[in-house]
Length: 238
Image 1: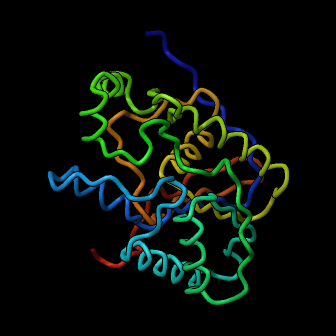
Image 2: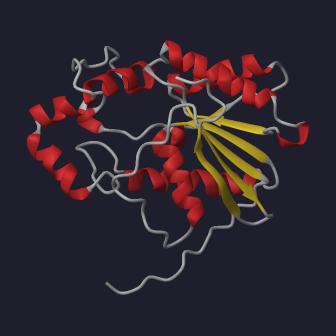
């Protein structure tokens, strides 16, 4: 393989960008239980957008609010953008309530939605392997970054819409501190976009960004530099 050149970071003149993954959802609980060998249960919601927070997810959101309240006045977000999905919007509501008043109302943007899984939406991995083994094998072969389920998105597809959002944000909110409340795929996409043109995709075995984690980039007037990714030290012990 020919050597690749160094990535070229995009111009993103924000003062700071913080990306928060929503608190644990009820679907996260069901999927984790199935992966540990427990019962395989399909979430009852008809749409991924309607999956709510679990009880621990609500507690995580309150802990995020305490982190928010502890920020120095000059370090607080001036603009909040949220995924339209219930679990993300509820995470911000609980954060803002726990942090006290005075926070900006969130702007909801469809480009911050979770990765769409198409015909496999809300299906645990074990169910997909049983119903569509050839698709499960294709996903294993291609890896999550490039695998696009029927009617859905690859992680590379998520990067395209997140890049579009960040480009618009850079023009509309230059010099401001911005908080995103979204999903693990979106946080990973933000990291990929900020890494720059030509940045290689992450390794295929990388773990998802933790629930209620904080990822943070600081700006120098033109570029964003990653200073923390998937941090959870603000959360109570499990």
